[in-house]
Each structure stands twice: as structure tokens, then as C-alpha cells.
Amino acid sequence: MTFVEQWQEVWEQWKRKAAIVATALLTCAVFYHVVFGANGWMVYQKKKAEYQRLQGEFQKLNTENAALQKDVKSLKSDKSAIEREAREQLHYTRPGEVVYVMPQAKAGGGNPPAVNTAEKH
Image (cartoon, rainbow, N blue to C red; front, side, top):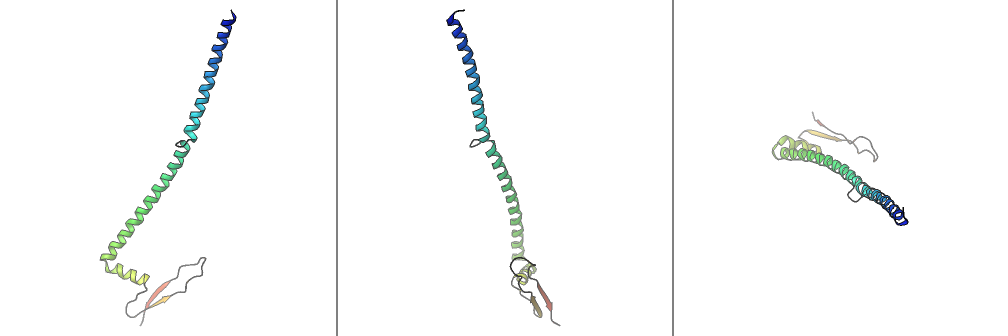
């Protein structure tokens, strides 16, 4: 085997090894980009969790909205609902009733103030 043939064989082996190393590096770079890149798997997982959280919040708000719409409808048409709200929020009474309002609890806990009504005899 001549020197040129030996050199060509060494050159071919080196090219194969270089191609394998280059392919491995390229594969690692693509893998890193897929997992940690701007639109990679990690970002996808965060966005997916945020989407699920927002879906739950959306459902909760829709439920609350439906309840509030029901309250508005009843307040527009139901006289007993109007009276109930007036009695609870404005402490309105019927003639002959007395309202007892318990003092406010100190900041930091406790039960909410109780409002009781009683009729005079």
C-alpha cells in the first residue's frame, strides 16, 4: 500500500468520524432547542398549565355571572326579593318591627355582625 492510499484511507476514516460527531452535535442542539427553546416543550407545559388555570377561572366566573343574572332578574320582577335585599342591606323594617344590630367585631377575625329583627307586641 502506498503512502497516498494510506493517506486516503486515514482521510476517509477521519471524515466518517467527523460526520458522526457533527451529527451527534446537531442532534443535541435540536434536542436542546425542542425542550428549552422559545417555543419548546418546557414553555408548552407552562402554557398548558396556565390555560387550564384560566379555563377553571372562566368556568367559575361564568357560574358567578349566571347567579348574578338570576339575582338581577329576580330583583326586577320579584317583590319579595326586593324586600329581602332592602331588609338585609339597608336594614329596612316593616311597621312594628325593631332591628337589633350587633356591634362590629374587631379587625382580625371573629364572626360577622348579626342582624336580628323582632316584632313589637
